[in-house]
Amino acid sequence: MGPINWLAVLAAAALAIILWLLGHSLLFPVRRGLLAPPPTGPAARLPLPIVVFLIAAAMLGHNFARLGADTLAVKPWLYWMQSGGFALTFIAPAVLLTYQGGETLYGRRAGDALLWIVVFLAMGTVFWALG
Image (cartoon, rainbow, N blue to C red; front, side, top):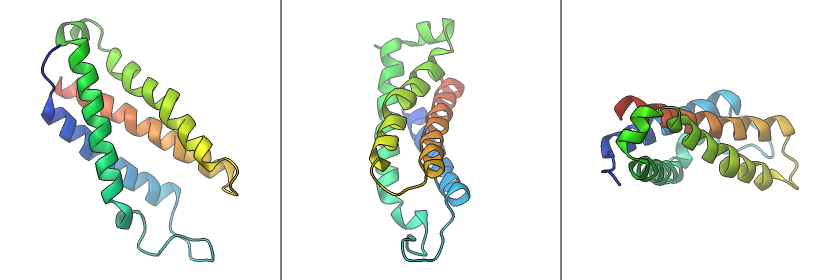
């Protein structure tokens, strides 16, 4: 196992937070109404995503360290296969299941799941760029 690239962990988490904020601002704008979120928007709920993305980036950093720099140099697609695979097999289904039984529109559910996949692929790109 090689060393964890902590700079890439912090940069990946920062990019993930920015993409999450942009995604929630563009895909799910704050609407006024009975079931609407508070007018403060996603930034008011920022502490939890910061923690979640720091943990996720640290997990990816550990995963890439376990693979090793030599393996990743020969097989760079593993950055996206690992990060995207994690999002596709665990995060997106969890997001879809979380909305199950609710009255949330399918487009919003699918958009939120897709946003998480894009965020994790972007984190894989950061690890590749800073690898």
